[in-house]
Image (tube, rainbow, N blue to C red; front, side, top):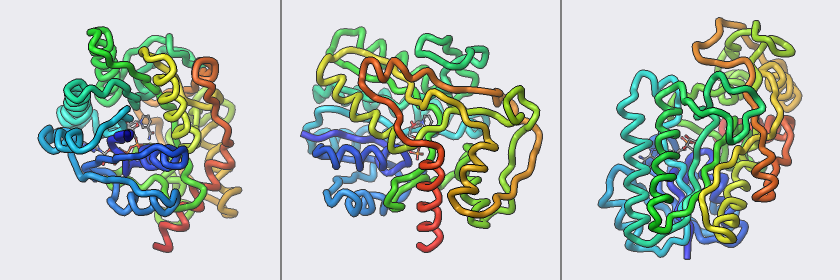
Length: 334
Ligand SMILES: NC(=O)c1ccc[n+]([C@@H]2O[C@H](COP(=O)([O-])OP(=O)(O)OC[C@H]3O[C@@H](n4cnc5c(N)ncnc54)[C@H](O)[C@@H]3O)[C@@H](O)[C@H]2O)c1
């Protein structure tokens, strides 16, 4: 019996594959490689000493996806595969709805057809309303403000409806805050093919001299140093949350929603300073205008995940920056 991971060569999928393999699960990974590289599969095996079965498959290609379900008996699916760049979702909404919503529907249909009843779904803090006050709980109002956020909110609703239809689907919806960092081995990390719009890849590039400086979008927010505050979480802590979610489904199959964050905010300047410590150099940055839609402060109340799944983030912002820098240096050598 194996776990199917969609988006398994991506940033969070690859780290989750490592944690699953380390815990003795068999892993089958599918990815269309639109935002990741095939050699991640070998690097996952190098870290764990265990094989990963990989299929280069697009979730929109139902026939190819069906073949994967025909070849393996899955206990559970962890569904990461999606397009995730907020700004791109505003200019390419149709592609985002097709990829994220249709991909999820195809997967749910095949799960139903092949009797796979446990799903862990990657959602996001972007489903919460801009007006919701941090710390955000799972009961904070949801009103996604971008097409990307809406694709995730719609998928959550679809999953709820399928669960409520009584055909056996149980699911854990995980709303991630801001995953950063990399595996401590330096063998896997954030390696997007597409231009990201999150902070960390740019901090890492500025540290390595690939770009002149990091753009800091606004320093006039009502925060301690004027820059935006987010709930940064180490990707390995986040990956471990998926194992807790699988256990939760095995122990009491139902539908759950949990925030995965550290429960405290760090400002953009905090991250830059922590990265300077990690790489032992100054990171040039430039204050620019605020970005439309960016909020002053967003952080989670992750206490429900701790109470109900026994999950709590362990790693610090210093750990996140150290591991990201180890990974960045490896990328430069490669
Ligand atoms: N990284 C974040 O900041 C963040 C925050 C909140 C939620 N999420 C969600 O977590 C999940 C994983 O994010 P990530 O950071 O690892 O992103 P990622 O882009 O690194 O990984 C996603 C993977 O899915 C693949 N993919 C995309 N569409 C596909 C399709 N139709 N068929 C097969 N494969 C496909 C991509 O090639 C990529 O490897 C996504 O659903 C994302 O929306 C990410």
